[in-house]
Image 1 (cartoon, rainbow, N blue to C red):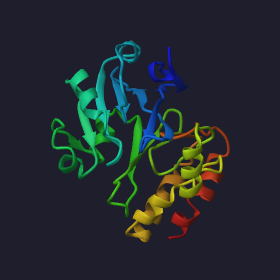
Image 2: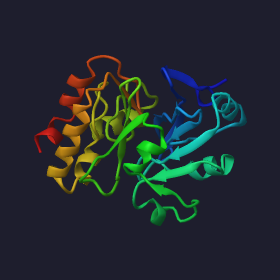
Image 3: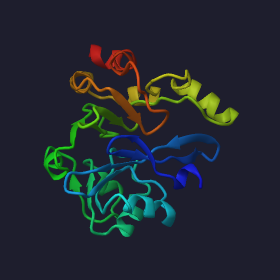
Image 4: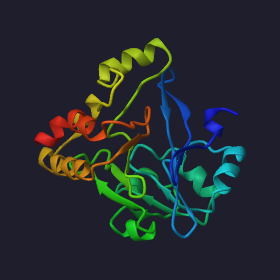
Amino acid sequence: MSSAETLTPITEGLWGYEYDLFMFGIVHITVRPLVATLPEGGLWLCSPGPITDALAAQIEALGPVRHLVSPNLYHHRYLGDAARRWPEATIWAPEGLAKKRPDLPPHKLLSAEAKAAWGGVFDLLLIEGNPHLNEWVFFHRPSRALLVTDLLFNLQRWSGWAASVAYWATGVGDHRLAQTVEWRMLVRDRAATARSARALVAWEPQLLVPSHGDVLRADVVPELNRALAWMLAG
């Protein structure tokens, strides 16, 4: 069974699986959707990717899918497929997705309301100042894991010369926690972004789980301070 069909535990109450994406048909990157258990027995599925029947069976063995989450305005490609598979699930998305994806079912906007709906398992934070992405990050309280989507990459492995060139050019090809040049260029309010970055670091996460790259399990706060230094400085 491939990694795209295998649900893998990350920490207690949190699982992920990976699938391959080829941007422009040649630049390889892996994407990690996440699944978390909630106190009432349901499941939270963030940034869903392709879901085979085999993978769906593994997910459903943990419980019923109650919430589907699009964490920013980029990670929504397979949200409609997940909604059709689990039509009873509530969809949560950032402001602006309804305009970008009018084909999707009605959804709720990510906000403080979601914390209660998700049983208090997550704290959540909008990274302000970048309306092009409107990315939300999530702090998994039971494990103190920080979940990020495109805010940070931790790329340690990839395939092909095109990926090597692209990652070097975009600033995430040094085999360490990093942020893309594109993300920085899209920031419109550095003061707001700084406030968000400081609030994120104040959670003092012990684990960092990115959508792109390896899970960071050591020196998380120092690495956050280094990778987000320009944001923290305002």
